[in-house]
Image 1: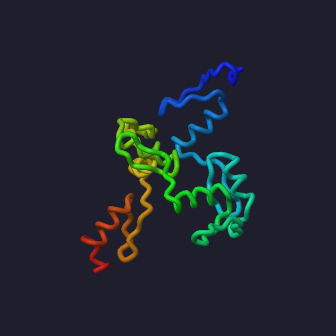
Image 2: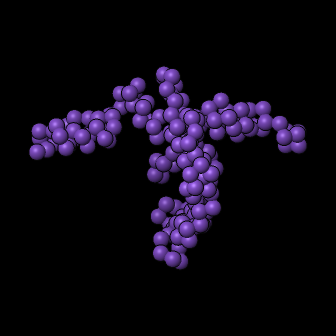
Length: 177
């Protein structure tokens, strides 16, 4: 009935998008949280939707059946090839009405438009901070987790941001000089 009535009772409090079905809403929430519960047992890549994992598994990662006639680059999925070819042809049919910048993909336009708005859909679960982009939230969360994925090989020091490592190696690391 929700299809016929258009009622979408499940609303995301982070971005305002609404859904007819609870299962679709649950999948959507994974985008905000970064949760990717479906893992490829062959390469370890993680996905937030089962159908994305199934698509990934359809074609072995080394087998790329779809080739670009313009540059020769190969792809494992026809949809990826089509997107690639749009970039060759400069088909950027998604326009930002605020600044005029154009994009190949609608998703890229939507991400860009946050630059012009106050929207910050990515909320930290540990504190009150919110972010415009998921990458910024992931970087911020390292403050809470203590994760330091960037290492200085000469001295062994670790950092939670790449910029901190680069600054360290340029100015402070005595062993790299």
